[in-house]
Length: 418
Image (cartoon, rainbow, N blue to C red):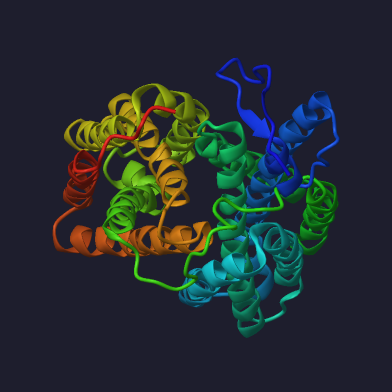
């Protein structure tokens, strides 16, 4: 069949994507379908992939919002809770090689639908745990399916970017961040009204399953490069390793903010107890907001310049927070850090998904594996340095990672203009 290319009227005010009949067929749109339905279908791809990103974040935030409730319910000591919580990153990490292989083998659409169901159900299982060992295995499953969904839905995002012919990844990750605020708010309401974790998780699970059913009809059928012969297992090339190192360095800084921001505000900034979470909230607001702007900025200035700017913003934010540890200046510093780390992971994922040597799922796995290691080891390193010196010195040490983002992104080739 001859592919007829038609230019579509702009959807987002940018240069409109060009959709061919063969592209339509490949993504579940009949060749005979008129132009306007194909426009509608294209928009639904984006909406539904975004909805799964949001539900992924809501599911995770719902779990996190009830950790104190679960600790109280199971009478866990701080040491036992810390050990049990380690099951989640272990499950996440173990799933990494399997996720890339599975997505490459059966396609991201099927993996999204399956992993979303298992992820939602594993959330409910956490609410049924009655002892520490049960909770450990529930969290292991939760982490495993969380990453399976993470790799597959990011692969879907890359396919949607291909259809739109523009960067959209950061805005999808922005929806995940927005879901974090929503999940925290819902969790607070549930706790305030006396709901135990189990009914709370059941509600989230039912909403997720319903969204999954609706969205399954509009997910992209064929992944980027799926019709090409690419290996499911192979060593990543230099460009992917470089992207992975950038993700590693940025996520070390991100992990430090997640785990140590509250401690920093108590011990260094010396705020009152009720202001403990102010730094973390400022950081998250900046990160979520910037993600909705990052795609447009990347389209205008290019990936290389945005990654360089991200590293410089993170460095500046850390220096401001460390050198001027007062309330206002620390909040400014945390805001700059949030802006800095916001764009790195989604833009790096987007670039990795366009690999010419590996399938999108495998390339994403390679890059996210390195990035996730940064997220895992960043907080403990902060603790070790703080124990040996001080918390301010440990935060200062993270600026090395932020500067490394600038250095490694400076070695990248400029992307061709779309």
